[in-house]
Amino acid sequence: MDILFLWETFLSLITALPLTLQLAASAIVLGAFLALGLALCRLSGILPLDWFARAYIFAFRGTPLLVQIFLIYYGLSQFRGLRQTILWSVLREPYWCAVIALMLNTAAYSSEIIRGGLLSVPFGQVEAARACGMSRFMTFRRITLPLAIRQALPGYSNEMISMVKATSLASIITIMEVTGVAARIISETYRAIEVFIVAGAIYLAINFILTQLVAFAEYRLSPHLRQPAALPTTSTGAA
Image 1 (cartoon, rainbow, N blue to C red):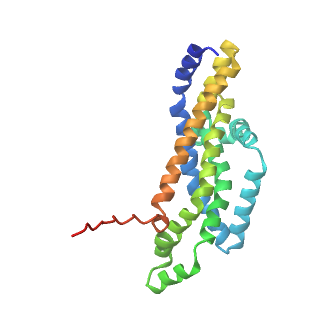
Image 2: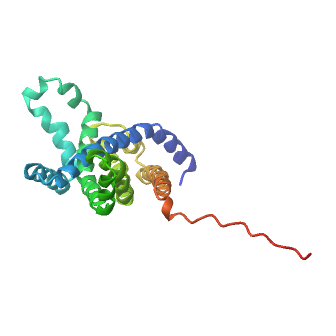
Image 3: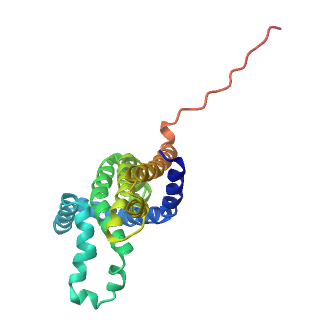
């Protein structure tokens, strides 16, 4: 392999890294709020909200992300009434269409992870918080949600990694993130193997760093699982 070409390709692809990270971060953060709302709808006991959340999750988990991106980017533009509203200033931009598609998709998967975390919170701790005089909202904010986040974090980290990789699909709607720049370089040089090796290494590095950050967050959120520090041993000499 041509080391010089690999280095030049890396320098070209690394310029698109901020856009890739921005896409992933926006989709993950916005999708987390939507996922929490969907999880609460599932657990609310209100039948219309429960069925709405079930239908949403079924639709977005049962269809490919690529199809969802196409429907949002190409499909919504077919509605003339929509093009005459203020929403069109957002939906006509490929970046925001990609963010919306990624957000809606990750929310469907993340909501089930969050729901599992909420269900794993021991009911006795909730009862103890209510017995101490906490309101329902305070109990959720200070007891239920932190414990649920800790339980859901390992599974949710997999969804975050998947979302970083899913940003590569944004290149099909003219967004020049890492994969989009890689496709442009391939069209100019016809050296697909070297270009995709560099692109894959960049995604691998991103996900490695993300994995380490999640592991650190798990460590910080689990003080009861940490090994206690060993006490120093003192040796007594002969008198």
